[in-house]
Amino acid sequence: MNAPVPRPEQTPDALRAALAVVDPKRLPEMRRTKDEAFAKAVEWQSLSPVRSWVLAWARDIEIARRPDLAARHARARSNAPSSTRQ
Image (tube, rainbow, N blue to C red; front, side, top):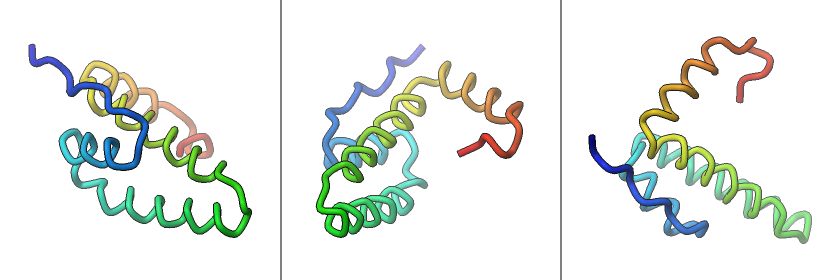
């Protein structure tokens, strides 16, 4: 069994590099949501949108970098009511 991709630091550059390995098709989504988070941070004069963005992508990368967890997550999402899916 292959070792999982190492857990990245919780910085935008490290998260982007990890996503490029584990799920590169999501890079445009990552860029879009990063831009949205930074725009909200300026508007709200708060870093909380940026921190939320980092945590959300760290979570998604943690799932994607571990095939066992990704499979369990996919099964759970397919069994969840549509109103609870993100």
